Length: 638
Image (cartoon, helix red, strand yellow):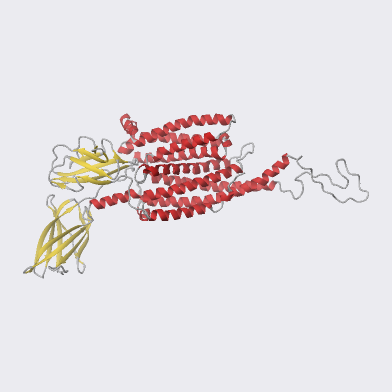
């Protein structure tokens, strides 16, 4: 009888060591980032001031995107929409979006608000401004915050949790029945667990299909039943994956009823049924992998099957744990319990599932995180650290569970031998014990040999231990039940964190977006202005550096140079900024002398556009000169 005890001790720690080693190897050599769309450029550019009104507004993203009629809106300074037609791709390029503008645009600052769906199925949004002719104040209001931070987004997230839970229950319970203990199919709690998993997964899939439209477009909850919006959802990849999942679940319902009849007829569960169950579970997992993170970014051909294996291993392990816990807590009216052999088979199956989880999880972490630094600087990386900590605790709990399983397996053989001896008394002659007899002792009774004692019933002697194996087995089952409970609770925590990860922008994408923004916008604006130092043929220069040179808080550093390029010391240096087109300013930078250069660290610029620098340099106690130049201040992408 196989119980898997040979692999019980030390293997979780070995797997943990493997995790650490592979993480060091893979993450240590990770490179640049892709996946999860980000805005890489726009025409007009963010903060641009144009001499003539543009005919189109074009956005370019880091990966393919899809959009609806309201995905791209251009708003006038009076908050009126000036793009009469919806967005479309440019020249068939899936990573672009373009809208045509109205014929005549008055001068002023326009706001471009966008919300698109990236290739991995998650909506992303942002906004930027450009000016036609002269910048102006604008009344346009654009929603800020996370695209998921809406009533529909939160409800969509809840049903995603339910869907993952239903998958784990359905796959795990079915795997336990098909691989570990076929007779569990006749146990009512297991049957109910299978039904619960199917109902949870089916109901959540229907809800996700209805909510997908308003989730992508930031619409109202009532629009979930809009036929036009539902039609657009069905034609998209996420909607198609949800429909395929419903078809598979309908087929599963028919199959489960057929399996239930086979079990009731005692016809058994064959190897073909196991293969059919594995194929069905794999197809079910594909409906996730083909529409989420694995379907976008680098190495998609490898990432999709890896994601399928990860989901299946999660379901087999977590759903199987819950099934085992129900069976360990059950004691039927006939006193029948789950045999130690079935527990041992699940122990080996769970070990294999955890090994697959570790291997696929390491690859997915490398693909989505990309560097050690991203673990502590991005939301995805921090959430991943929480998941890793939970997995470490699960491995510790699994180590104790496998030890209890090994002890239970060792006790099963003596107990079985005792029961077999009790049921087959004629296999060997009863043991006779000779005792001394005194002279004149009575004649032995019938059935008793001379000089022998009457046969004592088995187990009646003072050294009997027949009940010991039963007592020890019960103790081991209680210990195993406690550890399986702890492992299942930690497994639920891992499932919750995993669901959060699937809805979080990967660190690679965050890094890509930062890199794109850095490349599109300068890190600092540097202006060098010549001035007369008050001496014949002596013309110095003053260098003004604004960091980052964007709307909001800026750092200003000013250095004065002599004609030969050396540093010059001046008694006073003043800087003010004005934007004549909007009548803003002058804003005093309030420079302070820092022994060699002048600086200010809290200059706030309220608007993008061209600003005039008014620089006053006092060269002596009585002489000063004022010079001017311009600098372009931009706003942040998104």
